[in-house]
Image (cartoon, rainbow, N blue to C red; front, top):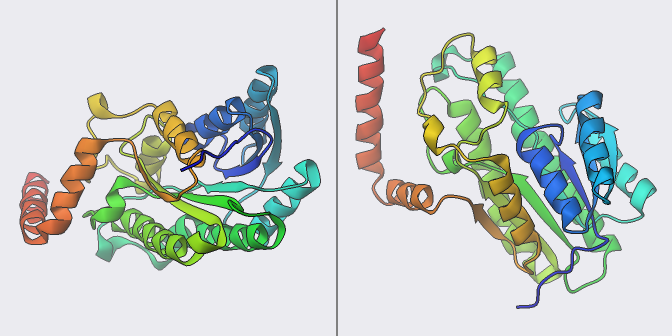
Length: 277
């Protein structure tokens, strides 16, 4: 299977001001890609762009909020205006909030689904349509979404997050099958706990110490690990799931095979948490 030459190809990355998004932007630039970094924080975006340019890469920044109407279309237009083409998007912006299912407000659910899923899906669809219309075969483009390892399990007290990531996973898989013969590749990225702002933001939004199942600090990965895996996938002429931990992938495969056992373990842990309060 021939590799894809990434030199001179353009990628747009949302949530690029920190964490996995930032690391991926830098890694893609080092691979020769032209990078459009999108996020809400202008100062952080400028730091990423300057780091890329200092290293000899090409990058532009776009301040945007993925939750607002029209922003994804503006991102694609910006890529075409600045670099003349768009080969890939990495829909990475997202956040988590901890609540029991009964305690989420409707506003909280609406907001997290808008950011993590609806906006992500819109960007994936807009980008894929553009690639089909504008880019030559055989590989017309590559659409990626940052899902999660928890996309494979309904996580107690974190169901809104795991649910949005499951939807990304499911739609990504469907798109991968639908578009593969037409030259647009689709991949979903499934990181385990990563050393980013995600956990601090989740704790802040949740208003209390987090109690849902989390990756132990000693096992958390650096964002560069995820970024390297993404660049590796971009170099391949096939879409798929991108995992950065084989043990976690195998454990979650077991959870799918034996759902009753996992349900029992989750119920046990929930009872222990309830009794400790």
